[in-house]
Length: 282
Image 1 (cartoon, helix red, strand yellow):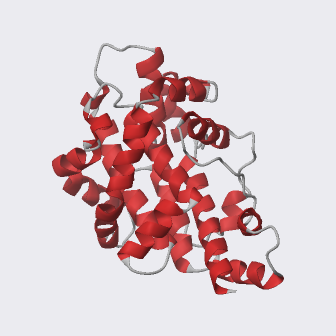
Image 2 (cartoon, one colour; image 1 turned 90 degrees about the horizontal axis):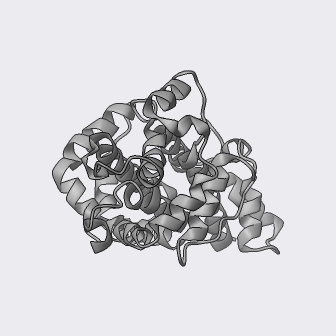
């Protein structure tokens, strides 16, 4: 996926796609989360920040968009959507729907797959943050958590991967749940992600995670206080195939790619990174 362009990924999404709508309504349901802006290109991201940007800024953003680090951001987004089981993208939202609108007899924190996916995706988000911006670890972390696309990614992760599927776990609201998960199974999930990475190093992701885990915990804690509105908002856009794990696995196995949310999130982040860096340079 490293040869895929930012514009190429953004062009895959329209404002009416399930991935776009679910991201949009989840963000609306979380207080102080950024408003979703639909980018069709890197130029759209530039216009979002500066409608009067010069031709030189657009040219610089276009050049920056071709850098390998941003292509690696896109690559990780696709990896997190597919996972190693072929249904990683579905677990958070599917579990949330089952919990709120189905069988509540079992606590979701007992779902090993969900817990492992939450850890793996935390590491993936850290890898994305590391590659999305230049500078030291502290500078990269600050740029990620202050960009609107980075804030959207944190809010989505906190809601879909932690707050919703683990709604019955009091630790989520306490701001230490992700750290607890990492302490229990972080090593195994780092190895899992590395095995999926085709030789790309995950070492930097581990270092970056310590710099952004605070904002991740905070995003999950905030979302945990609004789980019912988030679930109800997302419910209308969840495909019918979410009715059960067997159907979901079957749909994905047959090649359907219905909710590539991280692919969308990473393309937006890469576009914003190119735009923000260009605006600083020119």
